[in-house]
Structure formats: structure tokens, C-alpha cells
Length: 601
Image (cartoon, rainbow, N blue to C red):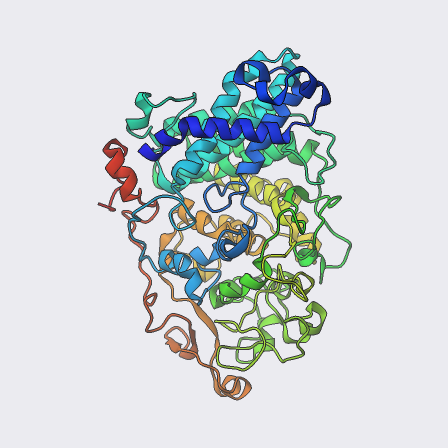
């Protein structure tokens, strides 16, 4: 942690008190404690006091740039990077080609450098804002016991705070490994401010303690109607399943101890939510529209049975600009498009139904319906009012006049909503953020059980096959054929297909980069980011296009090569260092005991 944090310790305490004063709405509280007499000694009395204090965590975690745990869509210009819609640019799903997305391009190409200072989506060490988030949690935990309320009520707020703390530390650990763990309020003389980082295994043991407390003590329902509401027990189970799956697979594939313990915790958390929670897969029985319909829904996700946690954006209160900025993601990659199965349940390498990519529209023929609900088919432009119902033919490439262009030719349509752009000024968008959904929990469960080697057909039917039912795809079975493209991944064909399902179902939701790292599959980032085939038909179809191309040696065909002859050409991945990110130089200068991650010196 930084000296800058030391200067903020007392300042931030007064900030918290100010937020409490502004947020308190209990008339009895105001009558008993006039605003000019509020203090730490007089505040912690009622359940409303604890609820009001915990509101600070939700407020602070809206800083998606510096505290991206409940990652939604940041405001203003930072909407261009601090949104889960953009994070696949770190990996092999998206090929951003705008200079504002250089942080994603840099990481994707393996050309990340040690940052000078902390904070921001480009390095995520958080700086003082992130550590003040931990401090805020620890202040609450030190004072909740003073309220004269029943323990079961108090523990709801304790659990809420601990859930936030565990979630935060998981994110620090997944990005940086060892972390400076603090579970008490510090002052300017606290030795922890200049201590070494706590080993990853010990930090995650603390995280699991926090998660277990939260899943035990949070209420099933806060009575807020998910409109949106507070994190309840079901949200805690979803978060636990995500965190434990990450940690379990990281330990399994990176050679750390007790992987099965974490995988078991992931499976059990997911199963508890699946068996007892009030959530289900959203479907209206329309496999051609249901998958992306709620991802494109504007303003209100209340009542959707799949949505566990979301963030509302309302004009005049909090807004974003993600719909316009989503074009900066460039386009989906050929590698992603080729991962969608054919309608017989087989990959394109094994299915006789695959029509090839010589003609753009043929890519969609006989494919998983999620492909056409993720990538724009030319015939769907009018349905989606793409781009703002301009009536131009799509896809479009750089150099073609008018409309919205794609770096690859594959326009992403999954989250597109023209109604949040038409007639709206900068940063007045109200597109909601889907923080947690039940579909991810089903994927977490299937993967954890498969990694443990205990998965059954009943498990698949209760998880992944529910997602396939929504889009009318054949069920996954325990012994699928091995896709030759993944024969060298070192895992079973079943795990290959579970990972594929995760990539397809969660595309554009911010998971792909973390998944590749936890599976220790960094070599997948060595592939170039390619787009549509560039043959005579394409040249005639896209006049004036400004693109770069390369020949794929595997089939002798020419494709758009997004980064050829740019700074991001020929991506690299250093297995000895690139699974963890570097500690900023300023933090190391102020506390050398933090130590740099291997390979970043």
C-alpha cells in the first residue's frame, strides 16, 4: 500500500461520515443525533444505521475504473474501457482497433509494461481508492457490534460487508497473486502499511472465511424486489461459486495445493443456489431471440428470473455511454466465430453441416442460434435498427462511408440497443449492467464437477443442457468427440466442451481473459486476431475497405489480419510472468517490501 493512502486515512473517515449524513433517512435517528453532533461514538445504534453505512460499499463499488468487482458501466469517457462489455478485448474474443482501447490491445499482444502509478483498468492495483474500500469494510466490521440489535439482524450486515471484502481480495489475488491482507482499521503508524504481501494461499483462506460467513448469514431476500437490490444470500452463493471455481482451477493447473477443496466449494455453492434459489433460465420459447433479448433490454431488469444482481442507470442520477463506445471493441474474432457448434452438436471440424466461410452468410447456416444472436447477420440489421436504423448494408469495414464499421467484419450484436443512442447526447445512456446471472452459476457447477471427476449426465442436464434447451441445441453428453483444434489442451473432451460452452454463453460478459489465465492456456493468446475471409467476393462486396490481410497456412485462404504491421502484431505470451500482472513502480518505491511479481523486474 502507498504513503498516499496514509494521508487519506483520516480524510476518508470524514468522507464516510459525510456520506452517512447524506444517506441517513431515519427520522428517529435525526431526532436523537443532530447532524452537528454525529460521531463514531453516537452513530452505531440501529439496524438502519448499519444498512446506511453499508450503502457506502455499493456507492464506492460504482467506481468501475478502480474497484471493478461489481463491474458494470462507468460514466463518461471511462465508459469506453470500464465496462464488462469491453473486457474480452484482453483475450481472443474481440479485436479492438481504436486508440482508446490501447490498454486491451497491449495486454492482448503481450506487450504490457510495468505501470508507473496505480489505479485504473490498465493495471487494477487500485491505488488508495481500492484500499480505502477495504478500510471502509474494516471500519464497519469493527463497529457493527455496538448496535443494540439481535445478532441475526446484525450478522446480515456483517455478512454483506465480508462479502464485499472477500470479493475485493479475490480480484486482487487473481490479478497479482500475493496481496497485502488487512482485516482491521489501520492508522498512520500501523506496521501493515509497510509490510510484505501475504501469500496467496493465506489470503484466499481468509476470503473463503468471508464468503462462508456471507452465505450463512445474509437473508434470502431483503424485501427490495431486486429493483435492483442489496446482495442477498443467493448472490453470495453465485459469487462464491465464481471465486472458488477460479481458485480451484488456478491451483489445479498452476500447481498449488488443495485445488479439489476449492472446486468442491464451488460445486456446492452453485448446487445450493440451483436447488433452493428462486432463479431460472430466462426463456419465452423462442430459441432465435431469447438468448440475447435480456442482454439488450433497456433500463429495467426487474422480474427477469435469470438476473441475480444488476445495476440501474437513470438519466439525471447515473448514466453511461457504453452503446456508442461498444464500437471501439472492433469486432468479434474468427477464432470465436469458429467455436460455435453446428446444429448437430458437433464442432465445425467434425460436422458435415458446416457451410464454410467463403460467403459471409454461410457462416451462420446450421449453427448454434447463439452465433446469430451474438454476431450481426446482414438480414437482421433492420430488426436491431443497426446502426440507429441507417438502412446501410452490413457488415461494413473501415474505409467504407457511413454507418458503423467492424475491424473483423463480425459486428457484435449481443448487447446492442439502438434506443439507448438515438436522439441521446453524450453520456446520457441508461443501458443497465447485468452483474450476476443464473446462467453463469450453471456453467460454474458443470465445470467444477467435471474438474473433480464426479460429473454425471444428470449434472449436465441440470446445468449446461438447460442453456442449450433455451436455444434448441442438442444436449451435451459425458463422452463427446474430441475437437481436433483442442486435442493438445491436455484435458478431456468433456472439459473441452464445457469450456467451449462457457466461451459461447458468456461471450462479451468479461470472463474470457480470466478463464484463459486460470486454465493456464496462455498459448491461446499467441494466435493472431483474424476476421472474415478476404476473397474476390469480399473485395467486390466491400469496396474502399481499408484492411490488412494474411494467409492462413492451415487452409491457404486469406483473412483480415487486424493487427498486421501494427504495434500489436505477432502476439507473445511469456509463461513465466504473464499470468500475473506487475505491481506499479510508485507503490514499490513507497513500500519495497511488496516485492515485484516474477519476470517483471
